[in-house]
Image (cartoon, rainbow, N blue to C red; front, side):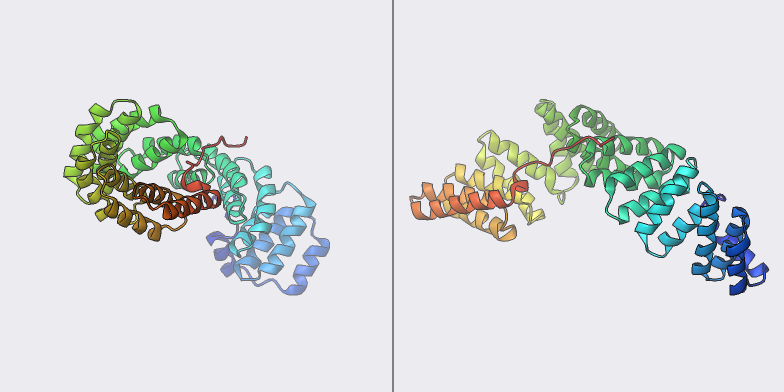
Length: 356
C-alpha cells in the first residue's frame, strides 16, 4: 500500500504499540466533540492497530461525515471492509476514495478487486484501467486485467494489454502464446502473424512457436510456407498434439485421407479428449470407407463429450451410407437436439468491444 493509503498497515500497528490504549468512553467523547477529520482518522488507525475495528470504523465514518472528500478516512473504511471479506461495502467506500484521491493507485486497484469479487467485471476493469494509468508498468495488474478481458470476450483489449506486457518482459515466452491466443480470438490475424513471426524467430527450437507461426501463415493464405514449420514442430515435440492435428486436418481437406490417418491418430493418442481431432479422424476414415472404425471413433467422441452434436451428425452419415436408415435418422435427430441445447460447441465465441 502507498503511504497515503496504508493507514491500516504496518505504520498503524507500530503506532499502536507506542500509544496508550484508547478507552471506549474516549471513543464516544471523540464522536461527540471531535471536529477534526485528521485527528479522528489517526485515532481510528490506533484502534485498528489494536484490533478494535468496529470502534475504528466509527471514527472514520465520523471523519468522512465531517469531510466527505477526506481520502484517508474513506480509504481506511474501504480497506477495512475489503480485508474483512465484505466486497460490497468495500466497493462503496473505495469508489468514494478513488474519487477523492484520483491519483492514488491503491484506491483504484482495490476498488477493481472489490468489483471483481462482486461479479461486476466491467466496473472492475474500469477501476483497474485507472490504476494502470497511474502505474503503467504494473505487470501483475496487466496479467489480471488480461484474464478478465478474456473472460468478458474483450479480446482486442486483452491482446493489446498483453503486447504491452511483452514490452516489459520480452523474455517471457508464455506471454507470446497468451497474446497470440488473444489476437486469434479477437480476429486480428495480421497482428497475430507479426507476433507469431517474432516468437518463432526468438524461440526457433520451440514446437509451440513454430506451430503458431504456421497457423498464422495459413490464415494469411500462405500454407505452403507453414508446412515446413509444422513438420519442424512435430519433430521438436512428439507430445504436442496441435501440429499433428493441424497437419492431418489439412490432409483431410485435400482428400489425402490415407496420409492423414497417421497424424490424426497421433493427435488423439496424445490427447484423448481432443474432439476436433477425433472428428477429423472420423472424416478420414469415412473418406476411406472404413465405416466400422469410423463408428468406433465417433462413439468414443460421444462418450467423452455427450453434449457435442458433431459426433452424432457424422454417425448419422455413416449409418446412412451403411443403409441403416433408422439409426441414421435417430442420430440426426439427436444431433439437432444437442445443437439447439449447446450452440457454443459449433459457434465460435465472438469478440466484442469494451463498453466505454
